[in-house]
Image (cartoon, rainbow, N blue to C red):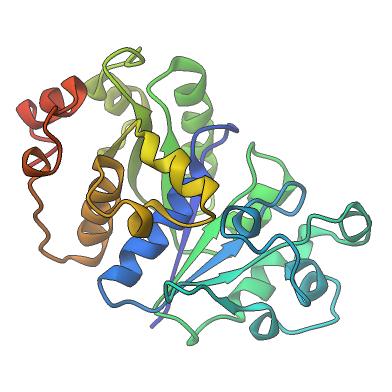
Length: 262
């Protein structure tokens, strides 16, 4: 049975696309067949991040009725599959997101897990993408504007009767923790199930058009995403960050003390 999981933020710049790719690759690391769909029709980035900005058949073609979504699936060298969207303005003008639900459901039975990278904000694109999934991960930063938008996203997801798996707190460090984890949980009334530290390895992976899971498998960010994947897949996974980095980040030490990192 295919699991359809959306990653949505309600706000741009929270690391949602990076998280979609890293989580997908981490799940693939645990042996799952994963397809990442770039449902950001207006400003797609999955293909760009993975070195495939232009492909013969893309999600826009599918939404225009020219192709079936199975024809827009591409295998990344890592083993993770992606459905890129078009970066062309002309394709954008010809495409409406209304049929996203039916199109994405066309992947049923083709993968163990379909991760849907939603558009930023809470416009029609994001809502159409939300309707295509059963489960949702809220991606946000420990800052009040991002958390406020995340709260709106949660309320809409609940109105759509979607299962919210939890909150992924990204780009965190000891200087930008405007809100504590407990405060974020109190405001959103949802558990923070993963804390992803700000890590230069993520930017280096982006430059190399790869996922941090493969370029820097021992980095703090990669380990955090693998822990999130293990949690969602109900797998055991342990890796000692202290042995990997001589100087452990102050924020990571703080997380371990409060039980987020083990």
